Amino acid sequence: MERSSEKMEELSANEKKVLLALANIGRKASIDEILKNSGLKKESEVTNALSWLRIKGFVDIKERVRKLYSLGKEGKKLAEIGLPERRALNLLVKEKQVSINDLKKVLDEYEVPIAIGWLKKRGWAEIEKRGNDVILKLTDKGKEEKNKRLIEEEILLALKNKGWVEVDEQKIKALKSRRGVIEEREVTEIEAQLSNKGKELVKRGIKVEEEISQLNSEIIKTGIWKERKIRPYDIEVFVSPTYGGKPHPLSLLKEEVREIFLEMGFEEIEGDYIETSFWNMDVLFIPQDHPAREMQDTLYCRNVEIKDLDERILKIIKEVHENGWKTGSKGWRISFSEEEARKVLLRTHTTVNTIRYLYRNPHPPAKVFSIGKVFRRENLDPTHLPEFYQIEGIVHEKGANFRQLMGVLREFYKRMGFEKIRFRPAYFPYTEPSMEIEVFWNGKWMELGGSGIFRPEVTYPAKVKNPVLAWGLGLERLAMLKYDLHDIRQLYISDLNWLRKVSLV
Image (cartoon, rainbow, N blue to C red):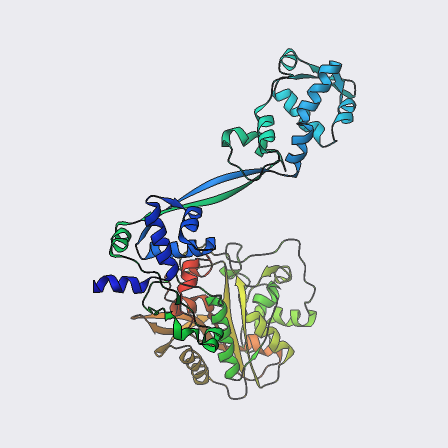
């Protein structure tokens, strides 16, 4: 008996009324029937109570989806004046044969092709071309069926002056294909009945008391709360989760990275997606025969020209590649192609932003970064994307050194939440010395980007005489670690379940 009392405490007054109504009806009942028998005033009160009773296991609910139809604007018109083919047939019966111009006298212009199509399909008319005119001739079948009512006409009459009604789908199919004739909507009908658990509870007796389920200022002011029972709250009861709006995880990570660099005293810079091969590669001392320049690795743009090449700088970079110019290097010792330099492409890295910045601002000090999209001809797989974000940055100041570069990157990743960080020697065409950055995550070391000090072949043509510390890091790779993903594509496939549940803290 004590257990029954606990169950009763779980039920609201409306839920008790619905249970008693179902017990009184004694079978499956619709929302309307329950509304009439329960004493409730609103349909929403019944549906809300049923929803909770189903969750608690006291009722079984069966849902049935019905398709209802009504006449649209065009359908109402046709119900009054008849189908286009019927009006055309009436004219044919009278005249035996008619021209297109004759049809336009009894039909609107847009109805003429509709009528001709149906006359031909139903076999009511034959079509003949005479010079520039089209003539329709009445057939024997047209004569025979002149007074025969079509299924479409029966439906139009049946729906005329009515609201939403059920109609056989096969019969209404032809009318649905005509624009504006039929409107359709789906209605879900609910039938409910007591479950075995609900029947047992009703047998034990249900007492309906007026109770307060939600306090408000009026109840407190008037003192009604003293006279009525206040329904207890069960903080462990199941409720459907509510998902509020929140930023996309990748957008939030971008903001986190941006804030860290700004806090570290950096300034943000931006650049364009479309660049010349000159600024994207040549200025960075990437040889013109480097594999990365080939069509299978870089996305080149057709029929596009960028006219921002400074001929003086172009001449210097040409010498840097061919003989080293004044850098102390021998260059690549291969012929430099200006045609290759002028090719237009989608930038393959954001280093192009920092090198352009150095050419505009050759004097120290400078600490800048950028977060931007880059594009490469990559095949989609769990660790590669053809379009992704790169985190780029430089420190340009007197006495800058490799140890300082390690310190900057170590501080950045520490603020990102990585405790174990290490550096490994690496090779990149435009930095020397160079290194890769790795962090320890989930029991293994993960490579997250490259860094180094810009070579003299990169800085001297820009009139930069002091060391420039540079790095390029992958944002998506960072996101994979932060959100524990094994497939980089998951960041972009809009999996709502994952987006709702992923922790952003």
